Length: 373
Image (cartoon, rainbow, N blue to C red):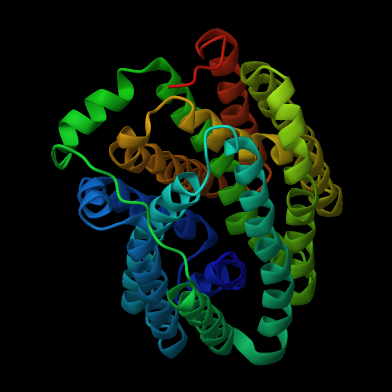
């Protein structure tokens, strides 16, 4: 799945630009799609509890492949916006199902190592996908790149269907169908609130990287192959290091790691704001992936699962997953407005402020010790 998404995401911003949107409006369109995902998220706990996560995972991959095919067939603005939004909805449900499936396949003592391994394997796709995506764009064009990403997604879904994996049944007294109650449950726990903020911060960083850096590079005259290579290099440290950083996560207090990671990423963004050198910025994103994101990305999932019991996962995770869309929505909207009003460089200041707020939350608000439910 991550391999297909890595191919897909390199082309998405350029696709929306070809459909007629400016860089600023691409950010705003992404924010609107994220808002719709959050608004429709009440149905996700019901789906996950009525059907097992593995089944939803398979169906979600098939739906995303269909949307990729539609985007390859048409670049009409209305089709582009509809397909982009539906893809985001399918992705939201699929990610929730995939994460819970991984969690259910591991015991409490194995959680850190399994999560680190899963993150590393996912990030392998995010290394190869953008690299081949940039090459595919240059050689085959936008439409064929979407067709390739759809084919890869369908292959992944087929492998999952034919695999011997079975979902573990969970016996529950009732389906948690009340969205209001699920939200109240989630935000009544300080540890889950902290997980939400941290997940949103990480997503804001990744969204900025994959949405706006390709546009900035194309504007500066970089080739599409260079765009794909740059994005791949920012993900390579995550693939190589996340399985190893789990040992660090086990030994050290989570709160300190969150403070360190977000503070470091904020410092890098403030530095990018002071320079016009885009190559320096790209190298800085790679370095911050090595030093900060390789710790934060697996840590936030581990931190979340330590706040809930197994029977609480299906009602808590969909709320937790909306942090991705809240972070994506916020950074796209703020960055789009910032570029429209003040120019490209101001966008780095926006991202620096978001990273700083996440670091401050870890310092002053987040629980001071990990809790295992």
